[in-house]
Image (tube, rainbow, N blue to C red):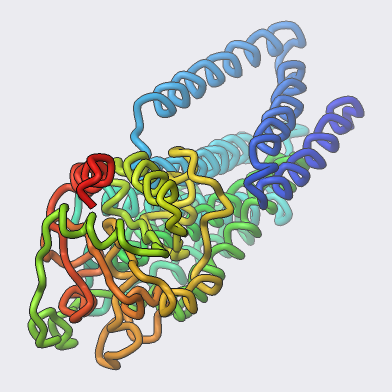
Length: 482
């Protein structure tokens, strides 16, 4: 055991746990990020002095070249991502990063298996064989890493609209997925029992392929509205993949950090499922939104008339209100309208109007998406309220201003048993005295379900780009036209 290295890993593990605790509050989140950076430094620096095989000097130099090359490449990708990727594309980027974590675990396991298999087949004296304790983590790392990689790529493709965001289903799909999983487990069990079998290398390749195919097929049946849950779940998978890699490499810090990521990810996934009043199994196998028309839920079925209003009319209603609740959604992110929302809120508050923000836990395309966007616009965090906290206030509120939100404000979740989202907790926007919805068109949201809110008597629609409409509202208030 290398005592100095293990001490560094121990301190890094403590700092990672401390940073995770700090991320629970917006007031300590920035400090927590710096703590996690220090922890990562403690994790990486000892690796510069790690020697692997060969002559001592040559191995050390080779290690340094590989590590520095990896650090340079990763840093370049991170910097370009930080500057180039828009906030609206953050869910896709998180999906990619989850996939990269899974791919890294998969590759480490492949290298470990091929290396040990080669040593065993050559009968090299003193070579460390792939025993049961070492074989199980390798195969689990392949299975979890492979599923995480292609599952995350499928989520990325859906969010980036490279493939349809709707559920992609075919007959017998779930049975096929089960067969792939059982096949992968069977191969892993066989290779654990007979790691030096003649066909072991080919079987191991089959395990890799089955894992990759399984990850893709598990995610494509999941509808776009469930993407926040999928992103959170893949984050958990990436943590579990890191943990198994830690066992493969016998690296304690990887085991601890991977466990933290995996556990936090699965807890967040459960919270997201609870927010949607659905089970994880229903999300994974339900094919949510696959056939919305069959449910008979449409704007026409709601038998109402859509009332369209101009920006000036909407500004008049806002300017004469005493309380306003703003409900942001993915449309706000697409229009990059968070700063315009903040400007409008400031103007209303100068008139003595109380302004609050209602945040649905699955609004956007990933957990906390709306919080991040509003924080970017310096919206005070104490103005943001979660669903449970603010839902009772809508009935006492003069105006609910919906900015690009759709499925999370659909009353069908409460009123229409045949709706695919029936039972999902939604924001009670419909109970406000007046509802103003900023939207580009009457197209349904990401879940593919028409919104009953849009035809309610107290709702008016202001069509157009959210950012431009908010600017018109703000200008009308500035001009004193209201």
